[in-house]
Length: 377
Image (cartoon, rainbow, N blue to C red; front, side, top):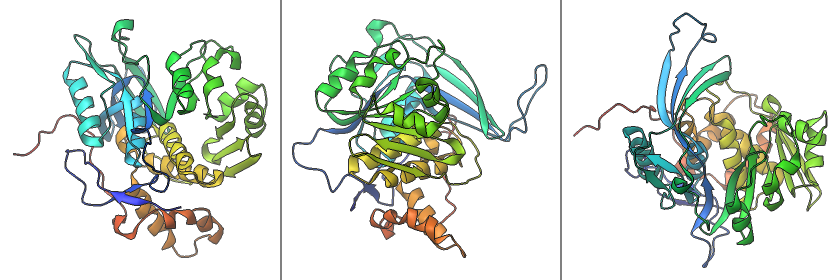
């Protein structure tokens, strides 16, 4: 595996001083689609409170030790993909309020995400989610109004892309998924909780057009009627070629029906500050490795690593790590005395990916996710 480096944009619109890795350098060729990944969905303004000692109690006031604002919703996934060096196109609706302007600027100017398929909806206020992180979990309160069918940003024909990521909704068909797959786009899918309680794979009609399905353990077991997430992964391969089941603190397990290969990688133990967006970062890491042609176990390890790095920061989209964070982590763990050699070998593939010049001192300091500061003159 080899990679080249290109510059990337910072949150202020200025080029980063350090190089960015192009994980697909070895597979790029003339005539490739303009985008590596296409996705669509709802962008929220996320307001995240961290440092709560416990869940808020009715009738009392709780004080949080940390707070930030950042684009959320589908922006979590889009940002994670862009920071890993993938050319990312997002179709989303943006309100014409200050929140919408902030989210659009943060994604287009700050992260270099293509928004040509997106649109601004007049007189529509941006959806907002308030997230409270405590005890390794989170509680969210959201508010928003769905755009009318005429205002939906999803194009009839999605742009050409190597891959697309779809968030499946039980009982709902998204026509763009079949069109993308018919055009040669490799579709990766996750799924939310089935509020209907049916847990019927027939209720996910777009799964038939997907290359990979990435549910969590509880979702996988409910959909397959199994009591073991690994057995659930194998059962899911009757419906999709590649099944990846996340196991929380136990890591992830995957099965590829086409090759007969399976792999399991344990999670990296970290002190979690805010789990917001960690699942999106995991998917972004796995898609990156898949498009680059890495072995299945390496893809799982990289996805788990990026997710682990993300939960150590707060603010869903802005907590997504880039290659500098990956490089700094890799150099740091190698310097620890008495490090488990087997654990180090699991991530040795990073040596071929991370150039020395991408390394920055550890621990890193990232931009504070906020919506209030003015730029200095």
